[in-house]
Image (spheres, rainbow, N blue to C red):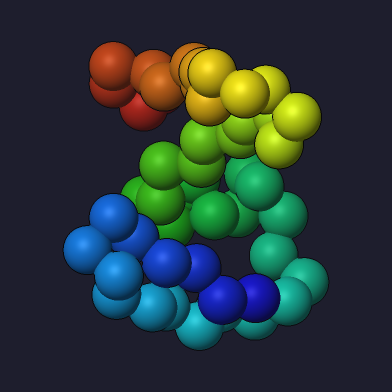
Length: 48
């Protein structure tokens, strides 16, 4: 799994991580619909 941040930096992670494991590592997971032309997404203000 390869992730890219807003600055264009890349991070390589294991391919078998769950979303919960990624959040537990301190990553903020944001999901959006690729078909949504307005590119709206929900971003939590503070992770739980």
